[in-house]
Amino acid sequence: MRPPIRATRLYVLAVVGLYAATSLPAQAQLLFTLLTPAVTASRGDTVTFQALLTNTAGAPLYLNSDFGLVDSPLLLDDLPFQTEFLLSTPQPTLSADGLPHIYALFTVSLPADPALYAGLPTTFGGSFTLYGGRMDTDQDTLGAQDFTIALGPAAPSVPEPGTLALLTGLVLSGTGCARRRAQRE
Image 1 (cartoon, rainbow, N blue to C red):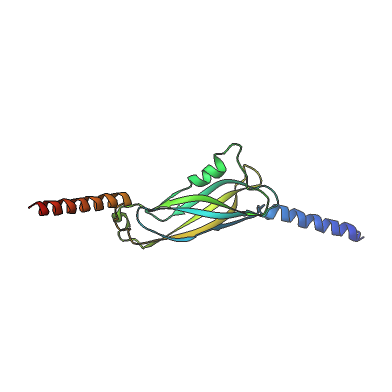
Image 2: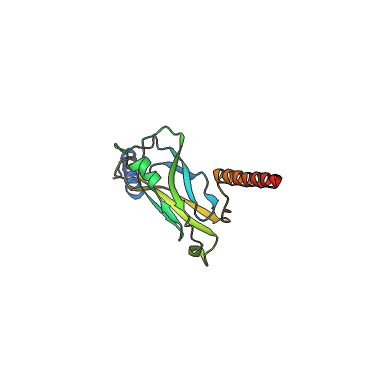
């Protein structure tokens, strides 16, 4: 005896639904784009990376942690992300408005010592990953972005405008004194 068609359809739908619920990871929807994924900087500079974050999940989204890597000798600091998303009480969420929002997420510092760059390429790579979800304890991977920093020429040593004005004033003053002295003689 065959089961009724309706019962068979319900059974198939239940099996497919159960399979989908258990085999597919639950992911919140986040569009994550670095505004400038490729930059040029000089030794001694600190570069701030900003991102465009858009929550398309239709519900608030918690950004609970991050993971950043960068090639040595550069140093990545995620304090901007921590300040924006983790240190606030209560922990803020990324609103479900579906609009893009710009946030500073991390900085990368380039050491000033030229010896640290000896034998290394002039372009350094890195990546930054965001974790979170619909709960303040979720650790789903929400998005990851790669970035590059090209080592530019070292900035020339130029005196500050105040120092330059002082030096110019001293030169003009000295020239004026020398003229007066020459006129007296």
